[in-house]
Amino acid sequence: MSAFMNFTSLWKHKSKADMRSPKADLKVSLDECVAALDLFLSNRFEEALTTLCSKAKDSMYHSLTYATILEMQAMMTFEPEDIINAGNTMKEAQTICQKFRKKTSVADSLNNLMNRHAAEQFTEEEMHAEVCYAECLLQRAALTFLQDENMISFIKGSIKIRNSYQTYKELLNIVQSSNYTKGENYSHFEGGVQLGIGAFNLTISLLPTRILRLLEFVGFSGNKEYGLEQLQEGASTENFRALLCTMLLLCYHTFMSFVLGTGEGDVDDAEHLLLPFLQRYPKGAIFLFFAGRIEEIRGNIDAAILRFEECCEAQQHWKQFHHMCYWELMWCFTFKRQWKMAYFYADLLCKENAWSKSTYMYMKAAYLGMLEDEDYKPFGDDEIELFRKVPKMKQKIAGKSLPTEKFAIRKARRYLSQNPVKLPVPALEMMYIWNGYTVIGKHQDLTEGMLETLNEAERTLERAPETEFLVDDQCLVKLLKGLCLKHLGKHLEAEQCFRWIHTKEQMIKYDHYLIPNSLLELGLLCMKTGKNDEAITFLEKAKQNYKNYSMESRTHFRIQAALLKVKSHTHNGSYALPSTP
Image (cartoon, rainbow, N blue to C red):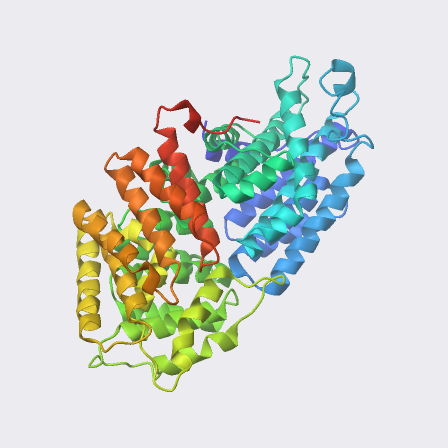
């Protein structure tokens, strides 16, 4: 049964149980929260929040659902006040859940819970309080990760996060125990356990090795396949968390696997999960957005553009959904090399969204930089002046600077001189940071067009006078050319591009990230051609031999994803995946 059928079934068949019973209170709360989520998915955002707010101080499920919606809003806006508000509201929800917990919690009863007597000490409501409390901690951890891609805050808060992780593990032990007695609302409880176990296993498995070692020291472990399996089970049974399990799977398949991986998500599975929701909510902004993203990563750029435009037209209340679409539309027109349209959406983001003004300003300047000198520039902006504004617009979210913003500021510094040396292909470099070549690689025409632009940039550099930036710029163009050649099946030429960068390693002055990333791309190329042992050598070298370079954390995420993939296809026992919890 699909998550959609489960969700609508819950929404349509609300309980009329006696409100005087604690079990009835729990059932009614769940029904009311499902109804509020239905309002939210129908673009009736404020109505959903109003419905939940009336009981958010008394009901753990109302409080959790209310905070979850606010956190989703914060993840879309990156507005500092939204992030702070979501964090505080989730903390308040955690306090509400605490009131319903037994004084001796699941996590504190590690030695006793596996026997029947200890398990029976918890009422059904107290068990739900445990899973809700753990979910509050989990979502607070997610908000922390959103603010700090380098995971420093995550590590510092690992004790609190570990409480959530341990609670989920013990609850899973209870569910799997022969002594487990299912309560009236057992499916919602089990769905919560599957959500937590799945989310932790999936997320931890994606982390770079250096962070994994720290987490394993305090008792964490993760298995991607097991995590996906748990989320799939949670999405396919009738429970309150089926929707959240589905949303997390969609995020993994369409975003996490691309931005923090090598594009290994299952797009067909994402479409299968999404289709029933699109049928039930044809104007649902969230689902239209994911539909656009699926078309985009399949290389169907024109279809993606239509979906994102449809998403913007579907509702006008939460502009945050528009901003998500503007970001994707900007990249869609980048893939099509329509620089003026890409500039248009970067400009809209710069004016309307607070996530990273520096990044948006950088992209505006980058698109102007992609235009030929003779091209008509209708915007009235000068690329040099825009680049010079980038460092001045730096901001911090919860005390942290975004890695993308740091990258943009560092790249823009060369424009601070009186006679700046232009960046060769600034938009295409940022496209690499966001793994855009994996997208255009599915479309031969788009890839050939991008290669044409890079070949012209290379010829321009060959004619350019010697500067302190020349070798760095040549290596960048070689890296991006190699990616296009790989996707066009010209593997030998691609390898030559990546290896050429290493001949210049000692001459690179600023863009030191190009060396480990060229090794990463060599490893991925070897994987593509079946040279798994050689791939592991390149990937390990990229991981072990370089540090303190731009976008280092994101590169390590991709290295980890590649190593997991190649080792899972290698029959050597030493390359086995991590064990399940």
